[in-house]
Image (cartoon, rainbow, N blue to C red):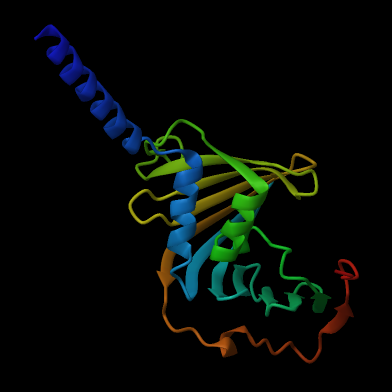
Length: 226
């Protein structure tokens, strides 16, 4: 009788352990869930705020699969960044300058990290860990908005960001904020709000007619040899 009781008790303990193990959420699994969520989007639009040091920029970011990206800034007014998969174009109204650069698709800005392709690169090149665990925490100090925060540390020295912190809305699995620390210890923060997905955005949205009076500078960053 005692042996039978012990055996049943042991089975119950094993069952409870297995159930608890199934409830454990690892950072890698959570990041995978976010990546799967973004893989469902054919297009994506959001308001974006970019902060670097004391500088702040505001605008609207639009993405369409596989790698179309456009940011129209309201501050600085009329500034535009467009990437059509092959060519990066930046218009700087302050200097009346158009900067063009041929870019391979594996070079990503912080804004393009909030896409299925960008998240796939993050999972491959960065190791994920929860900052305070899987439970939601305030986005900012004294903020009512709750997010799950992940710290991503680079696996390889070739990555431009030493560390990336993702703040994810736990209900929607949408990225609310990306904060990246560069090799030079500079911090760049991207905030996304009013997110809309799968609106049927056309490729025409990524055509940009530059002002006729602007000066054009080609290959302003590097010569792409990849």
